[in-house]
Amino acid sequence: MTPIHSLSYPIYFEYSLQELRKFISQSQYTKVFILVDSNTEIHCLPAVHKVLKDIDYDLIEVTPGEENKNIDFCIGIWRMLLDFGAERNSVLINLGGGVITDMGGFAASTFKRGIDFVQVPTTLLSQVDASVGGKTGIDMDNVKNIIGTFTQPKAVFINTEFLKTLDEREIRSGFAEVIKHGLIYDRLLFNTLKQLGPSGLTDEIIYRSVEIKNEVVKKDPFEKGLRKILNFGHTIGHAVESYSLSHGKNPLLHGEAIAIGFICEAYLSFKKNNLSEIDLNETVEAIKTVYPAYHIKKESYPALLEIMKNDKKNNAGQISFSLLSEIGTCEFDEFCTEEEIFESLDFYSSS
Ligand code: NAD
Image (cartoon, rainbow, N blue to C red):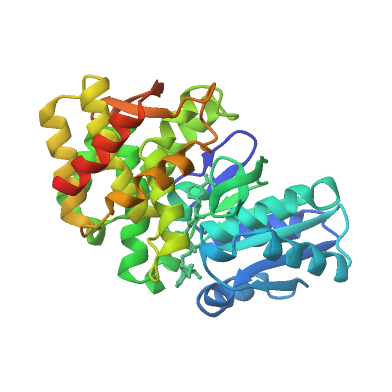
C-alpha cells in the first residue's frame, strides 16, 4: 500500500512506525513530545517507544474521553510544553484517537503561534477520518469542535495493528465514518460494508476510506464547498452527541451519534433532495443492523435544535445540511425547516 499524498504531507500505511522513526531522525527538531491518553500509553506507546529507541522525547499524558477535549486539558498540554522547554522547532507526536489528534493538533497549532505535529491515529475513527484533513479543535460548553484551526500535520502514520486492542464498541463507532465515505462518495464501498459489517473490516477498506477523505479534502481544504459533504449525518449527529454528553450517564460515542444522524439526514435527503425510497430504506437497514436503537425523547427536540443552531456550517441563521441524492453522491448547502428536522427525528424513532 503506497503512501497517500495529501495536501502537503504523506499518509503512511505500510511500515508506518518505521516511517515515523525515519521522519523524526531525519528532521532537525530540537525537542520531541508525545501526547497520549492513559489507554494509548498502555496499548500503543510501547510499539512507538520500540522504534524511537534512542530518540529522546518527553511524554504528555491526558485523561481519555470526549468530555476532556476542552480548554482545561489544552492548557495542561500548553503548560507541559512550556515546562519541558518546547521551542518553535519542536514536534508533537499525537498518539491516540480523535480526541488526542484533534486536541493535540489544536494545542500544537497555537503554541508559540504553531509548532509542527504529526498524527499517529490509534482508533478506527481517527485512522479513517480525524487524523486526515487538518481540522484541529476542542469542544466548549458541550458544543462540539467549536474552537479550532485548519492546520495540516507534517505527516500521518497509520498502523492498523493498533486496532487490535480496541473494544467492539469503539470499532463500531469508527465504522460509522467508513459507512459515511461509502454513502457520500462510493456506492461500491457501501455495498461491501453492508456485506462485511464492522467485524469484516480489512486494511484495504481502511485505505480506501482514507483515500476518499483525502480526495475530498484536497479539493477543498478550508471547507468552502465540497468538503461539506463530509458532514453528512453530522448536523443532527453532533447535536445528539452533544446532548447525550451533557445529559446521559453513558453518553453516545461519536460514531454512534452520527449513525443516528445518517438515518435522520437520509430521511431529509428523501424529502428534500430526491433520494429514492429504495436508497433510503437501504441506508436505514445498513445502519440499524449495526447500531442498537437509541431513544430520543421528544422533550429533547427543542434543545437539539438549539445545538444545531450553533453548527459551523450554518448560513444566515439557517441550519445547513449535506444531503444525499443517491447512495454514493452527496450535495451540500441544503436548508431544512425546524418542522422537517423534527419529522426526521420522529422518522428515526419509528424506523
Ligand atoms: P477517542 O480519542 O476518545 O478514543 C476512543 C477510546 O479509545 C478512548 O478511551 C481511547 O483512550 C481509547 N483508545 C485509543 N486507541 C486505543 C487503542 N489502540 N487500544 C485501546 N484503546 C484505545 O475517540 P475517537 O472515536 O477516536 O475520536 C472521536 C473524536 O474524533 C471526536 O472528538 C470527534 O469530534 C473527532 N473527529 C474529528 C474529525 C476531524 O476531521 N478532525 C473527524 C471525525 C471525528
